[in-house]
Length: 284
Image 1 (cartoon, rainbow, N blue to C red):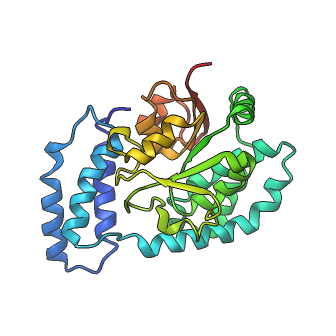
Image 2: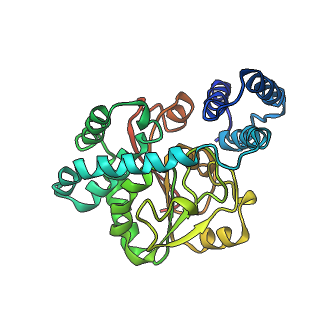
């Protein structure tokens, strides 16, 4: 998926959000912001949105002289998610179809990249709303069959906090699943460092070797590419992974996400804002 004009304001909001995470003097913030804004002409509209985002955030982190400005926030998001999960788990476990309940829970977690901006009560209500929202049942049945047939499944993760809600779909997939995380800290995306706190340390883990908040294969490590290419089934969580992998051909890939921006909504066939998406890419 290529970058659109509407992605640029999103980049800028993200840059200023990162700047706000640290106690810097206003003048220094202005200097850094100006330097990052000067990079905008270097962005490519033929690249995916996460590739361009990485260019800006990599420079930003270097200028701020910090490896992971979201380190504390990621831990708080994981704790917040676990508290929410404890409140709603019984409702999801009552769902008559175990796989559908696990898929709905995984997609429900995709609100948690912004959940600390809302009250626990509102977050809980949004999570529970996914029990009744529309979901592509045809793709769900195909997904069920493909999980059964696959011998090697790669589950590409997205954000901290959200990862807590992935556990039940991972349990459904069983021992044949490997989880993939980011190779370097970028925004609130999960890396190896946050795996244990998210309750996922029992799984085989591979990281992308990349800072891109998505999966761009030519930027990934050889280890990751080998796991990706040898997997029978790819499960891709969140918008960043969709934006980078939706153009890849050959792999059986299911995308699980909330459609949060107009560019992604259009790419998915003009789905409604914040709709639950279980989309498939690959041969049948």
